[in-house]
Image 1 (cartoon, one colour):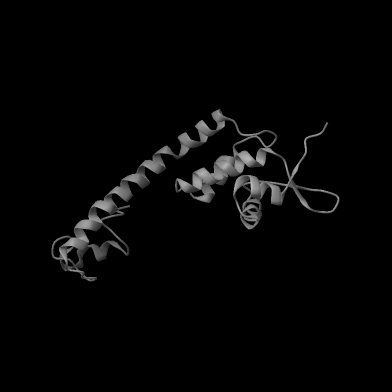
Image 2: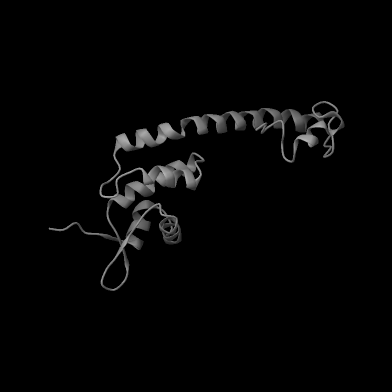
Length: 146
């Protein structure tokens, strides 16, 4: 008996992802579907695992382009396994550690900055006298030194 494929509505209901998001993921090459005789999208069951990987990675802050790159390394013809997830998540560990460090700095610096009371947008006599960091470029130079 052939495997029953899922409609886009069934995938949306099972995965908790909106139909529009599934269409977006497909347009970006993150998932793929076939078409039935009525030209309606049909997904194989492995798409549920792929959508789960996408959702977890997005919640962790992994950009869609990075997720797509990782998913392209997986075989198309089978459901991603726990070993696949281990490989994918290991690729993202350094990036996530850097993001955690930036967020920790942001949290710690934000309280101190707001607490000082200067509220100056041009310069801060404690952290940025004479707006010296403005010469290094736009943005939060102390919180994102890269």
